[in-house]
Length: 90
Image 1 (tube, rainbow, N blue to C red):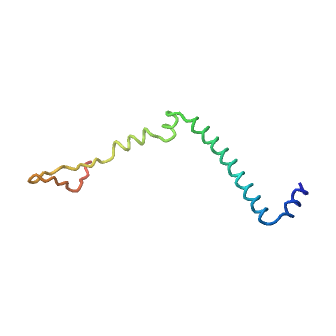
Image 2: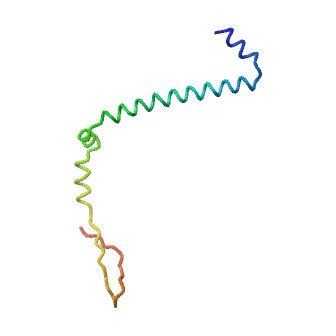
Image 3: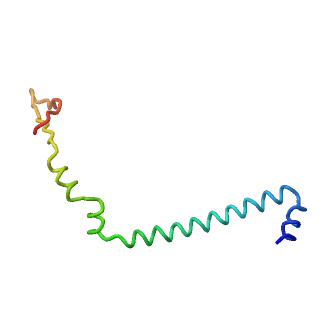
């Protein structure tokens, strides 16, 4: 290992920089590949029912249903359609 480092140190700086960036790019691609594999495994492990439980979707749906509804009546004046500002209905 020591002799390899000595050989690299003896090379010009441009070669050493190029080698450094090639190693960094290679390691980045390897780490990205591992990350993709792990993400695919986690996504494949999800089921719809488990996802609903984890995200607490039934309670969220209840809150969504209880929210105030907006009513926007249409007003027709002399053949022109006018929409007033929305009113909140409880």
